[in-house]
Amino acid sequence: MFPRLGVNIDHVATLRQARGEEYPSVVDAANVVLNSGADQITIHLREDRRHIQDTDVETIRLVTKKFGRPLNLEMGSAQQIIDVAIATAPDWICLVPENRQELTTEGGLNLNDGNVFDKVQDTFKKLKAGIPQVKISLFLEADANVISKACQIAPDAVEIHTGTYTRLFQNGDNYGHHIDRFHDAVKKLRGHSIACHAGHGITAENIIPLLESKLFEEYNIGHWIICQALYEGMGNVIKRFKEQFNKYPL
Ligand code: PXP
Image (tube, rainbow, N blue to C red; front, top):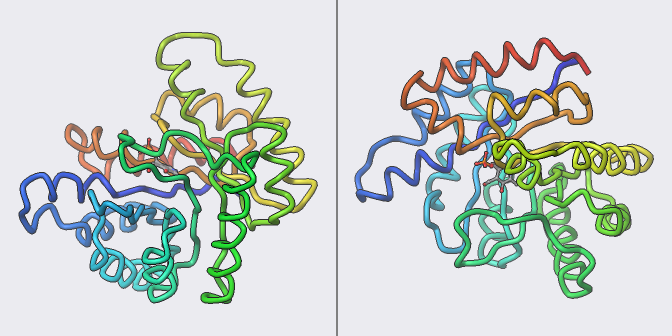
């Protein structure tokens, strides 16, 4: 078994929204991504609709169905977004924190905060009731208390936020303690039969220590792939990632 590659195509929509044109097409992007061997499409329907729009969720869903591969919808807890999720019935949902002012998702859900915990648990229950077959992951920091709280909710997976690790790596700083934290978190989660995914800030370079650690079954990668696609083409970037993944059996 090899790690799975989920490709986040939000930033194809960011380019489109920047000019209010019909292109670049997220449907074409999803087709290229899956034709090139990616295992899943990931999109984030934000409350402010800054990139992915409601109609994109529907059209991308048709592409993932055509390929028989999962759609992973990242979302916050707003009722309107829950309604879209239930209408679209993605295979996976990743619950993330959402602030309107942030540039991107800036960290995991803070389950140490009782209000956040209650909200996430409530959303989790609504989604499981509305989409019986859906699998749900929680986007979390590898913090021991947060991971313990997550086990109480019993999601299908936890996606570990790798943003701080990737920043240290890019700056050439020591990141070893983050890998240790990932090990501890994954050990605890596996003990509760919760799958372990990773995402945020990942590049072809900084993923190597993660692949070597063999901790994560799935990686969701967006910004770097879309940026690198400018030079290499999206299909080539994805094929290169998949070749790299296939060197690190789990
Ligand atoms: N996983 C989650 C839960 C995210 O919120 C994001 C960013 O939207 C990603 C993965 C992808 O991060 P990046 O675009 O930095 O690769």
